[in-house]
Amino acid sequence: MGIVSAVPDAEKAVVPGTLRAAVVVLGLEVLGLLAAVAVVIFKIITGDPDSLGRALLDAGWAAGGALVLGLCGWNLLRLKAAARAPALVLQILCVPVGYSLAFQASRPEYGGPILILALTTIYLLLTPQTREALGR
Image (cartoon, rainbow, N blue to C red; front, side, top):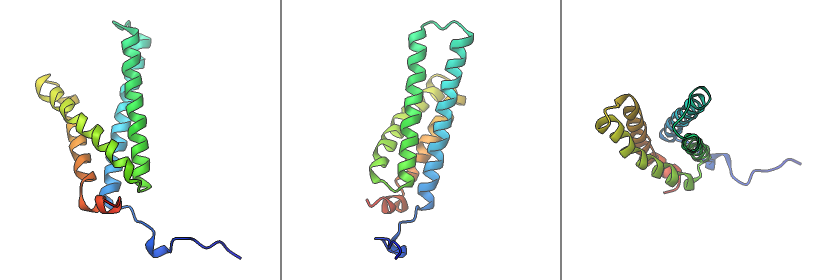
């Protein structure tokens, strides 16, 4: 006798394209944060940082951010609605950072991608298809 699924195939949830796209953008952000960690560690090893503790803390914050965004993306793919709020909060926090870097610090090569990715993710997480898939 076989095992019968409690959820019929017709009722199994499908991840919409907008949510998949949001997870891809989150993945790009995770890769960017991991690259930042690698650069900071490389500079610690090859150079003489002003403050070793601050450099390690920067690397730790970037690694922690990558972990949180990665977990959010993983849980969003599993259609866990609770993962959307932390992902949105982190994206909203990235908007002023990206803006400051791009326009006030005259570093558009850093701030531009942060700003574009954050605004794209916010949009994708707030589309009707994504909200419906996450049950909100």
